[in-house]
Image (cartoon, rainbow, N blue to C red; front, side, top):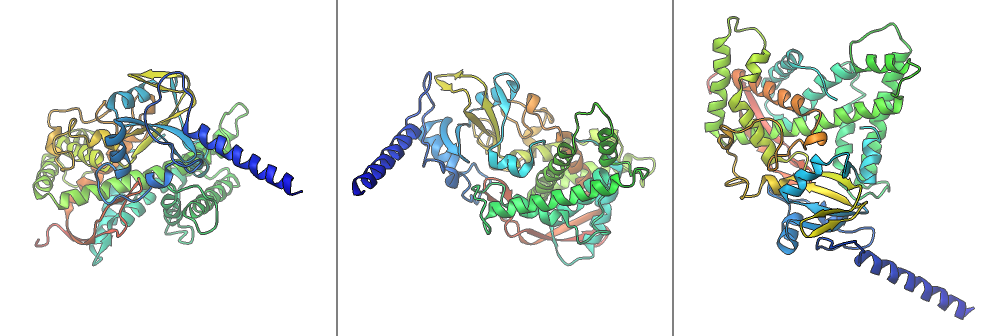
Length: 453
């Protein structure tokens, strides 16, 4: 019996040794980029998600660039990954979407985002919502900006998409459940009570249940029209030849609300932080918007499309904020075939992680890359993407909500600098995990502009 036990132990040790050897010595029809796969299964995930207290490219990425160059291999979230900080490879990945590459997310991401993950609407309502919220902020001694802006975005998007009103249903707080979801999105996928990932899944579960209940309530009242996305969903689900399912529609809504929560609210908060620290930029921004008001025949009229398109310096502010902020720090794609790039081979089935901060903060691409300098965009393309500017992806992977995000930021800044001024109270520290976060918030006090500054 002892011999049998020893044989089993020996077999187990040999199997594990063989598995670890295969993990570290990968086969490839060519030359793999250099790098380390870390520990089996765990890979280098913990190093990747370690907090970084700077806007600069994370230490995880910078250290490996020094050691291996602009393209290297690793293992993240249980998958074999080629990390690209090379602008040419990153651009190629976006351009070859649907041919050599396809969009991909780690299994843990797919589980919390939903397997089916559009944007529409424009200005008047958002301007009204922004103004109403700022009027309320003025009455407060301090406002935690990230939370306040996120609430404002939910008020706007929630009403347009699902007729959600947090005032009518205070117990159904979408934003709070999304906060729990966001905090655990870039965490190691351990589905154990108490872990960040478990809380993330619980946050998603609660939001999805709320959305499902809202949809069912609307389906029970077929003659009640709200002129929102749910109306479209209900009509489409009635068709016999529809490809839309309830699961797809709820995942789409979940994804759109998540994208606005993270991207737009983070970007607006960051823009105000940058403007707070740069009086010259704030002055020029205010002058651009005051000129818009002066040119109006009716000063009380709302923003027009022509006025929006005239906001040249505003778009410079937005581009520079997005370049420095890197709100979406990584993008994943899976290779559909063996791909040769320079001296390396990306094997079929491997994942390429495009690391946009390494491109946007490269001194070769931008002088003094960590400096907030909106004037660097003078005379340059202010929309779209390029090899050195891919904050919204590119080609088929270009973010469908990019124009909406720019519009929201521009309208918010217009309302802010034409009617209010502010002073920082506390917070404003930034941490990346790798997503951008304000761990201590960013607390400011707002004042009406006609009152003495």
